[in-house]
Image 1 (tube, rainbow, N blue to C red):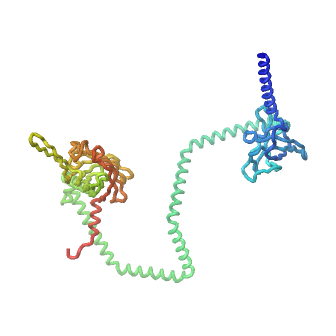
Image 2: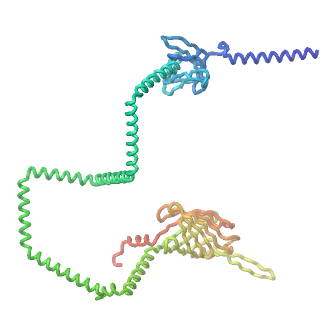
Amino acid sequence: MRGMKTEFVVGVFVIIVLAVLTFMTFKITDIPWLKKKGGYVVNIYFKNIAGLDEKTKVRVAGVDAGTIEKIELSDERAMLRIRIRPGVKLYSDANASIRAAGLLGDKYLHISPGRTGPLLKDGDVITNIRELVDIDDLINNISGTSVRLNKLLTEFTDDEVTDSLRESVFNLRDITRELKSAINENNTKFQSVLGKVDSLVARLDDLVRINSAPLSNTISNFNDFTAALKTDGPGLLKSLNKASGDLKALIEENRPAMNSIMNKTEAAMGSIQNLTARVERGEGTIGKIFKDEELYTSLTNAVSGAGKTLSAIERFRTFIQFQGDYLMEEGEGKGYFYVTLQPRKDKYYILGVVADPAGRVEVTETTTNGTTRREETRNTDIEFTAQFAKRFEDLSLRIGITESAFGAGADYFLLSDKLKLSVDAWDFGSDEYKAESPHVRVAADYFLFKHLFLSTGYDNMFNKRRSFFLGGGIRFEDEDFKYIFGSVPRVPGM
């Protein structure tokens, strides 16, 4: 019973192996009756198919796209009937060529599908083909070329021809050497000449472009003048003769007056020369200034000091700023008034008054029957700011009094100073109402226009009374006030 079971297992295994071998055999041999035909058929005509056979693979971009179904002879050309697989699209400008899989590999038919419509249908012909070069024709062409080359070399074996050819080669070598030397020697000059010519052409182009309208007007006026001269020539000459006669008479009539003017001019020139001589000798106030080195140095220093003073006054700028913020979580408003004095571009002073709703804390201690009672009272006071600021390119550092307490801050400017990012810290003694840490405020100011800006940020971020805020303000310079007040009309009688 055990032997029969073993034989049964062996038989099943043999049957499975035979089935696998049969499937692989049919798969490799590509038996047509096992395959279902599909796709569509196109025809191609070649003068020489160079060993292609039926059932040869057809490839598009290196991928199997069909097979050669039949090869026939039609009018001394090989007609290939090709079955293309479904899903492979060929266009009317498709082209076909015969290629080899390797140096010694089998041939296959390569088709480039093309791009220009319409699509090829069943029975259409691919007309764009690339014929395969025949090895025999190539060998015959090479043989003919070698024969003609041998004949040409035989003709050149003559001594006279050889000497002439050698002399021509030597002459050509000498010419190229001399030409190279001339180019190297004159390269700098040649480049300079080209640069000057280029500059001259550019200037002439600019001159013509700028003066095209005046030049056109001048030519037009000259044409009008020549036309008038042709038509009114005698009259024009007569008028010129009369004008020249009148001018001559005028000069003769005023000759005494002109002589008097010339005499007075000579006398004035003599006076100027005498004055110049006195200055050179050091006579008079101006002469002493020029001759006395100490006086001249003092005067120069005074003028230089006055110039520096005026320059400093011109550089001094004053800004006035009004700002209001609304503390969202506190539901209160905070007002600012600042005056900025800027003697130099990188140094300025900030003076300000702030109305702070948080205010300061007053601590009152009352002792009753041995018990001490502590009371804290918030006072809303006006606070003051006085800071010194130093700017380093886009970064500005500030230090001084901030809202009546020692503080410091920094500003970073972006977008050509239209956007300012700021951080301030003060009240390090925690004197504000319900304050346990220093007062830190971060803000961003953006100028919508020259004088109007918006402000937002986070205030008192390390204490319980922290809050987002949103606000804005206006900022004017002293020059703006001069313009505003200078533009206000005056009241009559004032």
